[in-house]
Image (cartoon, rainbow, N blue to C red; front, side, top):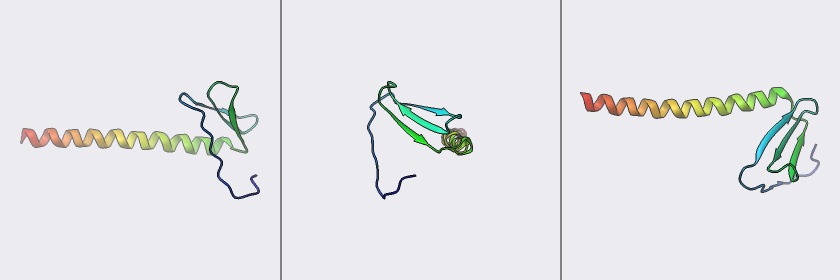
Length: 78
């Protein structure tokens, strides 16, 4: 647990990837496996909630674009 109030910002460059280790309950952010940020104490349920939120936001965005295209098409045909 962080015991001080601070923001830590790291720049890993383009191509950074995320990995999750269930055994260690850790989220790993790395680009080339030599430089990495390891966040311990992130449980699997938290990761699943995060993934579901990302997928839902993406689906909502795709559906919104699709609805706009359908509305434009129906206006032209009327």
